Image (cartoon, rainbow, N blue to C red; front, side, top):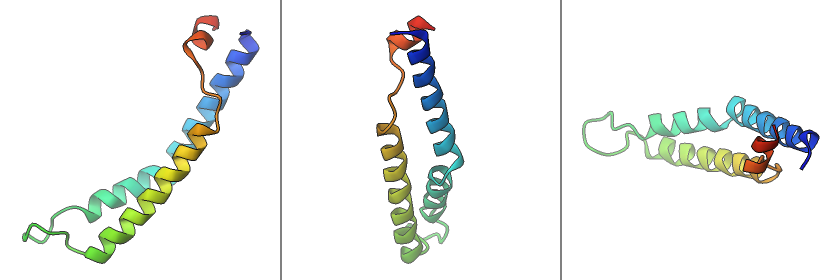
Length: 83
């Protein structure tokens, strides 16, 4: 393991993290949270269609974020030791 390899892994992980953080994951999860809020007083989702839509959007965002993470050669403990 060289410092250059470790730096490349770290840069790739940083870029991926930033891409996910600035992408659709967090807004989709926030939308899901809002859709799931019991705001009608009856103990059920206020809008079934909005909840279903929010679930679908969140599922897609989670899947895309997961694929991005899996595609990166993530830094290991050895990389941090080299740095």
